[in-house]
Image (cartoon, rainbow, N blue to C red; front, side, top):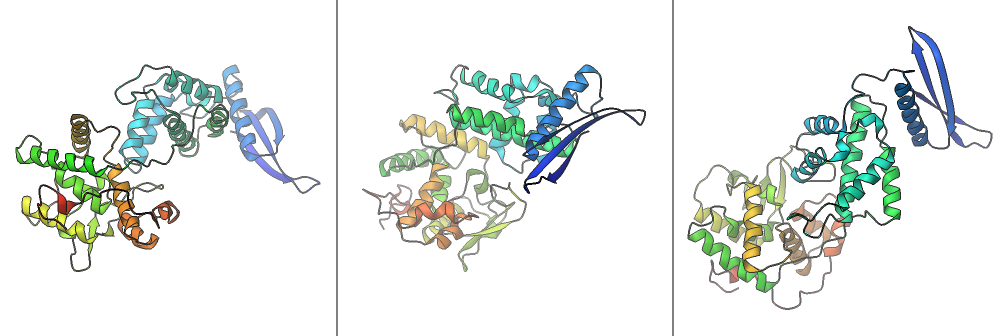
Length: 373
């Protein structure tokens, strides 16, 4: 394994001396060194030289050096579990079956990740990507792969560096082949909500839709909870006296989902939705609504397709919930008590929002309630 030593030169600038040693039977057979202005460059040089020396038979890499990226992704997923949510894990499992995953981790260079992006862009359109794979999806690919490389470097001791991915990212962003996802602004219109309200209620009442999508839609609009979080709301965790409820197992955040239960504030109209749910699904134990989040996502997409509603995701109801709070004049701290965002900056766009143009369709106007506000 190589070593890096940080030293200051005559000008007071920090320089990093990278050294690779080849040992045989405890004796040093060969040593190479080079100095860099950045530690990351030094790490990358060590990785490349060790790979080259190993290929020539001059050095033996540590155990696990033959690990493919496919196996590396599996090792990473087993280690992190579901800490980062279903979507990221699903993306990594898909990446594990792509051509780039056939390569050995220690052989990967920036060009491999650039080729991966071009390969992805050349693939035929699919139902999940009707317009092809977009720049933000490709950017996510590389972010996830960089996490895997970093984990294998530190946890498995492989002579690899996430710098190979970072170099590819810099080149691809310069060519505008990848980009960060733009802030999504899609909200359901009053007409769309009216049609969804009538359709989902009718399907549930007729028994043709077992997933309680009508109840879930209104609960999401007033709680701002994500699909998976709505499945983890225990009935015993609703405290009407203090206006709060419990989310078991924590919530999604940039640092991953923890296992600590959290409390959130439920706006007043949200309690009307809860009352309706308790009336339709009696009982004191278990989750407020018993459903499979994956099935709920499928039923939502099917409903939108049947009604001709384009590009409306269930997650957009969270944006709708927070937008309504902003329109009603709530401050960032007040919205945060509902949304449970860690960062206030992500909520600032909801503060002082102008009143919504046109009609706003609410639970009280629902065909399932029949009472005007």
